[in-house]
Image 1 (cartoon, one colour):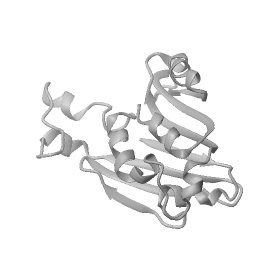
Image 2 (tube, one colour; image 1 turned 60 degrees about the vertical axis):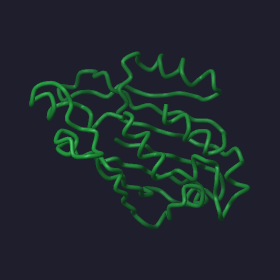
Image 3 (cartoon, one colour; image 1 turned 135 degrees about the vertical axis):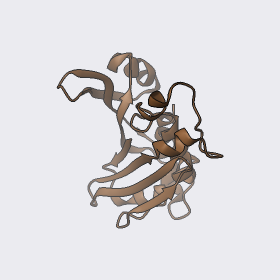
Length: 183
């Protein structure tokens, strides 16, 4: 699962202060069901992108270790072969709250005034299981004032899948955008 947050607010690298993650460092966090990685593929004064990559451990989910949410129903094959480790889901919501908790709460020790300020932001989530298609995402987020864009993800055969690459953008405080990303 991949979530990127991008801003063109100047200086754009202030995104690191808002997320409390330094743009020059790759950081990893144990989230109980896998590992969340935070890195910055782009960090300039003009544009900054933070990426949250969620690497879920499907074996731990199936084994049902205490606190790992596993032991699901169904045959052995359905427990191991499914899209849970790959498609954006509640796992992403949990990782967001654990890794970016202070940003979701609208807090920033170093840049408190910036945490409350509306800045241009784009959140991109891929792959997102959006069975209602892009129209569903538009109906969900457009009434809240966000612009929504996206494209269908192709499967191995080059055919459209039920997964989407969706972006939601607006000029809002970071906490507001992160909060709607957990929906």
